Image (cartoon, rainbow, N blue to C red; front, side, top):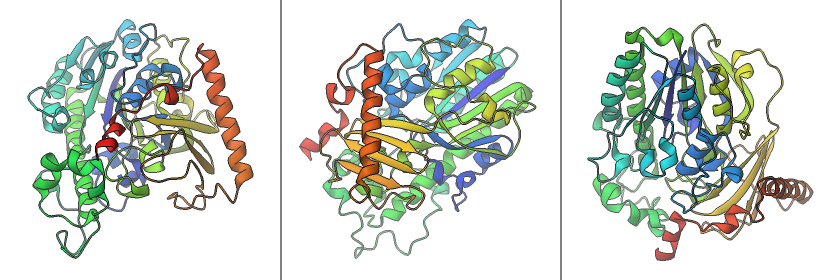
Length: 433
């Protein structure tokens, strides 16, 4: 077998057609889902990029691998293996077309080939899907005759949303530049306005409608969807597609304006922690199969290693979801997921089938309560905090969460919650705003 792992940065699930989005942002991804398996509820236990990818690579929860911040000082313990190393040991030729090594060195471990086409960009995340494919597709064609693991990391639709003109077709408002529209005034009071001013907002002109910026995010998805289509077509042309497992996911989602979070990926709300997961493996996985169970980033490593008949490290905490993907196993893997963030704010969350509790370790800059409880069946957009009116349930979930954290720390010989022990990183910009 071969594995093609497609990692789309900042891709929220609910802006894809196959997840119910009404706009035509993702025809190639939708077709991939029609040919394979789609998981409705895949979650990122740690956000944003560095914690998420550390979780994917290790099969460990962020509480365990201790990488809870983007750009933080903590390093991954060298004794913790990453799954590309295990695939390499099992005989796979391993390659990443990526630049995560620029963030942390362990995100490049296990690769015989590590190809970074972003060096000529001052801002590395501006590397385009065409540039990524210009390196990935020749490598794929050269190595299609041997068992391979190819990791392809696309940066669209990460901020700044600046898709080529032909993809700027999703705005359906009346006037994106209406001077009477004051919809972006709140954004101008945050660090994001200055952070992206020269590289983004000033390039757009005097935009006043937030929905126009949302439409550019959709355009970025449509752009990378074309890149994915080209990569999958190249796989077909090699003749290796029938023996290749394709996995497509995102490291985290994105908030558009929800909960006062403007075009960024913090906040433990569904828009940011729920990510797509789509798999296609002809002859092995059923087509047009949808799974509603919880899965998490840390489940990827044991599942892929199991399918590859490679060693699964004993440290791994994730669970093998191959049976759920194949439609042969009936028991859900998880009854709840725990997520955390420590980059713009310090928060933990536990998400059950129906409810989500979010607790803060310190006040945030969005003036949200220290404790939030949402009934996701009645309120899927998480607009109504019921922590006060259903305090008994909030107390129960908080006690469970604090015990879960304490138990995990004991297992690893630590005593301090990493969200308390490690400072926030990007959130320090608030002090300068």
